[in-house]
Image (cartoon, rainbow, N blue to C red; front, side):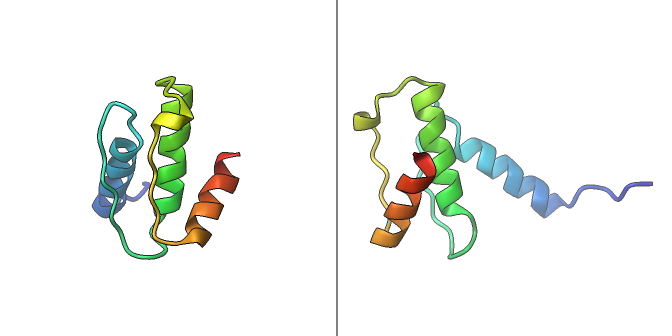
Length: 76
């Protein structure tokens, strides 16, 4: 028998789905190493591809130049 899904893992997955939904406004706050950059990149790509939002109409803010460079590289 497979183990039942971990409720914390399920909550995290559901939160990530909501955070990348182009139809929602989102403020993403989390501690280091939790996947914020990944979520922001996924959201950016979904906004451009699925919602057909022009990149110039998207504002993504990070707290470091390193994170901004990483986001840019992942998007490209």
